[in-house]
Length: 618
Ligand code: AGP
View (cartoon, rainbow, N blue to C red):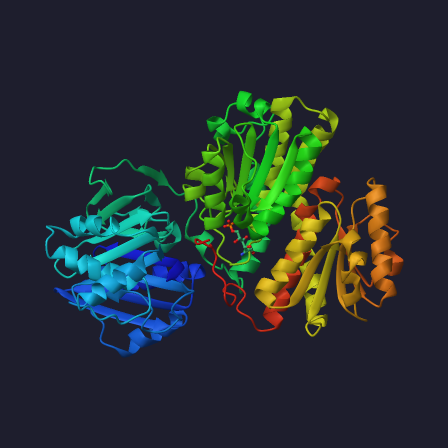
């Protein structure tokens, strides 16, 4: 089975191989275990596929005679079942050599279909579920008038989540794709058209996009785009223009997308705040239209569901929302949510946070919530993705495309959107702390400059990363909103630097984990701002506790905080912000540290092992 892959199809006057390879390069962040291409030229199908990164496929193509063609499909894979081998790489070709198929998702009933096809004499060449789709498509083509008709017959036989893209040697300059529970967009060019998992694949050719809905099939030729539902009826689609360009998908002189995205954060934060306040200083969230102020006044519980970094943003949101609105707010990992039979009803507001908008665990959680009658608000960075489409309202973050697998600007902009939501709820429900909310609003406006200030100190953080390259184990501590920052700092180190790193609520340490502290072990500690003295004093004690056991303490504290010097081996200074907003600045040095440490250790920062950018299966 294959998941979380990048797919592209092209029809037009250019050399399909060039368009497809360039598209796969931009999609490689979605999976990089193997890559492949199939083109149709002069009624013949040519396929090349290779295990490993796209570079392996490019090397292969350089050694073989691969035709210039004007229609083709390509794929970059993230594998689970069925190892990353040449045979399992996509595209998969039907036994009669007539059709080639690429696929993103899971065909859940593939074992039954495989058995049926094997009994009928089909020989399988791979261990993938996708190959059944290729053979089924070829079988249906024997009795169908068009590839689109055959695709429609095939999707009826498939269970699960899938985007399938196919070419047929008999088709006249066309590519056909089908979508269920897995992303697919159409790029509308002049005299050429594209289908892909996301806009990045064709952004250098067109910024005009048709977004496909659930259970739809599209047929593209160079001049036409035809969309039908799985029921065969013409289907409604949404067309939009992408407001970012190719520079957003280039490294622009940085060594990694991740580092570029860290440095884009002042702009990303500013863009996410842009246009949210009217001249009276009131929040205006246009995208909330699907949920009325009356709905928001009626709710008596908020549940935030998300995964990974987005979940940590949700943890911060819980503190802010409960404090500003006094509405009980739970935050839960999406993969756990629906399996514990959560107590959800029409008075529950479910908030979901997802950079990609395609994370399967999160999607399933909101579907479950909506069935229980809850309203759902999505915080999302990807226009038209499945999660915002299936939510009642959406607050878009305006981070621009995030390509590095480790989320950075995604996280900071999610925090901003969470703060906006909290403030909006407080506004709609009657502000409990009007003065505080005014201060927060003013501070938010100043955060892009503060994030920039943190980036201006990058060289010092890089030097720290070099000095700790051999450390091996790292601890991150924080209380209150500093706790999710600690978790995020640890996650970044794990995912790109492959270091053992753990984040703890600082107060929990002495309940067990302090036993792992060894002399010289680096411990990062986030110190709350002055003014939250009870909280701050407790964190200062925690620093002493680890210092007394020989830890090497790296303390993130405000510029004006003079009390911490004696127990800190290294101090990373933060500009002053209210406690609730401090994660916006405290996270930045931790991102820089992880990025540099992974670089020093020689890892591929943008494509860390075993990971893919969006996790589109549960
Ligand atoms: C973050 O660095 C990770 N790559 C990962 O935890 C990510 O945040 C998580 O998979 C959720 O993704 P989403 O925001 O696209 O839903």
